[in-house]
Length: 560
Image (cartoon, rainbow, N blue to C red):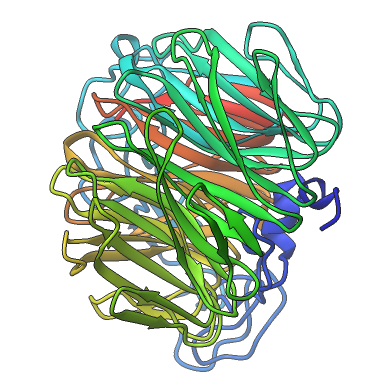
């Protein structure tokens, strides 16, 4: 594997989102690219339901009766049900065009938007008095970089990890990469966003921190991948054997002091994608490896290319168990969460076969997504597969107060999570909730005509679901339609909130005609939402505009 493998995954995520990459996804890529766009009933890429295709902004010519009376007007509203007439939200009017083939835009309507802390208005139209002041909401930018993992730690102080190619400043000493991409950790004050501590993990080659968790004592555990020699703090360093190796490192939560670190690898490539900590302090790590790797229990060989692993360590970094799943095809472990009993829930994607105890999962052709639950000793509770010949991938998982698994990722084509077939327009984001035994509770698909990206899922106030990511051109969340200011040439970030039944409460887009996407999301004990975003141009979370370079790291604290 070339030393430019991470560098090749450009921070200009808009290029990936808008123009796509192949289905044969590298194990370090975070999103799939776009495929071909579908037709649109009213836009520039297709005709109406029974008409011919067209390329003008009015769409193709219709094939049936007129859609409306020429030049007639009617009232309209594009916000979610129950928000019209609440707060600043109001309906508007739209006019049928002269040909009678369709209505123009809904003019004068006001739909929900992020609360503006500079006013007392109810901009999100939830009927509640804005609580910006008491919630101490904030947004900050830090320089070119990508936040890949985020946790709202104890006391509501967010901890973010990721990678950066140059310099990054969280308010302490400026972090400077030593070569290509270096990894970083930063802890901020939850009330103000001010710097508490930050660390660079790096060397002359490429490094990335993919996930972060906090243990019961408030210590910080970080996992990822590195090439060459990597400084991890306190004069300590790790050395890879040739390709990318896995690292697991633990830091003091108060000051970021290095406590211990571990390396796992060989001359081939390995990556740790996710980490979780049980209430007893056991550290659970998920990822993928190739070749023979000793995780502390003897050498474990992959069956072919990349196999998935689940590694359990004690609080001192000693191995409790290491488990392998896979065959001669690729299997990617991408996210892990743990419930109050110490049972981990895992998700990712695979081709070929994966065996979980007596359950064998077989992909339908392309990459299928899986969700599995293990018991505290590593035994299998359930293992589910979802997908068809198109790619489907699980990128994030949480466990809610009922012990249900809440999963998000991306799907293309047709998928049935157990609630009936769902069809993605292109590459769409999904939300899935499963019972402790793996039974389907609810599932939703959200997205638009172009490729979307999944930035994560979190459990919000009152058990609500929060999904973050990015979209290109347009995206639909239930009845809510988002349209990117840059059209099909750029991506915008989105944040969607769902009630416990899976109904859309709000869906908000953020950004301008440049590229923006949310890459991670977490919630504190009060349900306040922390997001990491990568921003080019301008983004405004309702707290005032932030201007970034082509791909700057932004963190924000938002109301529940």
